[in-house]
Amino acid sequence: MEPAQYEQLTAEQAITYQQELRHQIKLEPLNKPVRIIAGSDISFNKYSEVVYAGIVLLKYPEMEIIGHATAISRTTFPYISGLLAFREVPALLEAWNKLEIKPDVLVLDGQGIAHRRRMGIASHFGVITNTPTIGSAKSRLFGRYEEPANEPGSQSPMYDRDEVIGIALRSKKNCNPIFISPGHKVTLEQSVEVIKNCLKSYRIPEPTRQAHILVNKVRVENSSNNSGIQQFDLFS
Image (cartoon, rainbow, N blue to C red; front, side, top):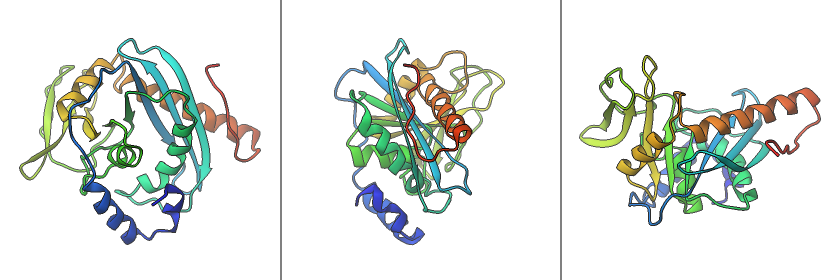
C-alpha cells in the first residue's frame, strides 16, 4: 500500500495494515558503520489537515549538520493514538525522497516497537523504506517500566508482559526519561548506544532536536506568509 492511500483507510483497516507490517520488522544488528545519522520530526495541529515534516542529516558521532529536507502536505486521516503514523508517514516520506544522501540510520521522534502492535512510526517508516530506524520518544505510549535513577545514563527496561520492548533512559538529571525502542534493522542495544552518543546538554538527542527546530521554523514561516503549501530551505 502506498502512503498516499492512507487517508482512505478506516481506523480498523489501519490496524489491520499495522498487523501486516509487523511481520516484516527485522530486529537485527546494523550491517555497516554509522557515519551519517538523521533525525526526523513532524509538526501539526490535531485539528488541522496540514502536516509539516523535516529530516536533518548529521555526521556521526560529531553531530555536525550536513543537510536537510522538508515537506508540507495535507492529510484527512484522523488524530488517533496508536495510529499517528498514518497522519505523519506520507509527509515524512516526501521529505525522505528529497534527500540526496540517505543516512545509515534514522532517528524518529516517536516509538519503534514500544507500541501495542509493535508498529510505532519508527517501525512503520523503517519497514516501508527498508531503512534502519530508531524510535526516541519524549513520552511513553505503551509498556511498563520502573523509573530510572536520577542520573544521566541511568536506564530501565520497558516491558509488555515478559518481553522487553524498549528502554526508559534518563538523558538529563532532574528531567523525565526518554523512551528508546528499535524500529527496524537495528537491535535494542544498538539503539540505546546510538542515542547515548547523540546526547549533548539537552534532554532529547541532537538529531531529533535539530529536526524539531527545522519543522517549527517551516511552520512559523508558512503561517506568517499564509501562502499555502510551500517548501522552504533552511540552514543554507
